[in-house]
Amino acid sequence: MVTMRTMPFRRSTLFSLCSMGLSGSLLFGISASFASDGGLVHIQTPSGVTIHAEVADTPLKRSVGLMYRDHLKKDHGMLFFFSQPQAWSFWMKNTKIALDLIWLDAKKRVTHVERNVPICTKTDDSCPQYRPNSDDATYVLEIAGGTVDGYKIEKGTKLLFGQP
Image 1 (cartoon, rainbow, N blue to C red):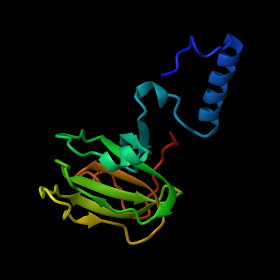
Image 2 (image 1 turned 120 degrees about the vertical axis):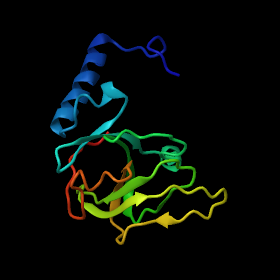
Image 3 (image 1 turned 90 degrees about the horizontal axis):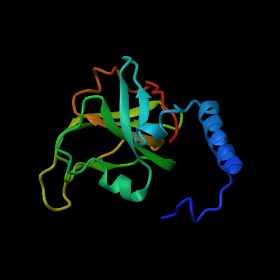
């Protein structure tokens, strides 16, 4: 762990770094509240509801996802970020709650939706896999099962959110 004591920053340097970060956030349309609320990405849906999504942007975070969760608030979820577009596949092993899975391309347009995907209680690796019909997904959003239609999210819909 790096502490301020071991890093010889001057106040002017620290101020410049903070200013650049804030400017970048404003320039790219990223909410300044991103860093202050535990790293959630706020996603605007066509229905006007904001989904507060945890970020899965590392191999470890992506492999664990929403496993072992007993509950997911209706307006919460997890947004998976990938560096390359692909037909990313997902499964429900060790996932205790049904989910809606939403694949999005680099322009944040919905390319595929799997509704109310059930939990998988199998203890081996034979849980079904869910994948989109195209290979252009850069993001995948997981939300509580049965909520996607209420948010008016369907193929072709564009969701609004910033990058973490």
